[in-house]
Length: 294
Image (cartoon, rainbow, N blue to C red; front, side, top):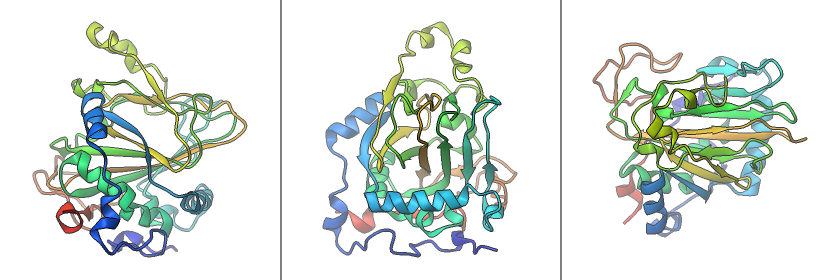
């Protein structure tokens, strides 16, 4: 049975290089133009998070984790070999890889992720949960249009951020992420079935929001990421290509967010009573900019 790596709130391998000076961290800062774009549009694309070597490590680990007989399977909060509601499509989706294998664990402490995340959140970065998404070749399914926070109202206030990292080049043909610019300023909307009908929620929008529904496809190279606000509407189409489209996602929030539920926030996690700060073994503080940035 696999050891639960959530016990360790620091890197456990050499996946990330060692950073000893503030200068090493400073180089990952986003520019003022990038921050302004995120504030206006609700997303930011093309931020490199991984080297090619790191991508290969995570691809190898993902291949192991997609085996439902993996000895660490019990550590996942959610695990779906196929979450698609379309019998002709497949979407592998799982939460909790950081608990199982060292690459996905140490990814959370990657400065190339932490520095931009702290800038976009405006403070210290605390972990929420990770996700794996794999759309296999030729019959990879859709991820419906949705806002992340509609699934996360069990935490409050909204001070959340998502980082989507490609383990393959993502294109229009293989089901890259699509955003609705400016939708982070919309109200909270009902949560759809995540891997159900792509355009289901679109039909229920008020007319003024339907008129603003202008998707932008975000194509990325492997190792690149996009960041988005927790209210930004996003989704991805099916993969029709002869190669898989694989990705990992890191969800974080600004330190100080509290529980908004008197039940487990994730499967297998002890209850944090409503109104108490999110912290502990499963929600570690990843980064405080005061410690690394001038």
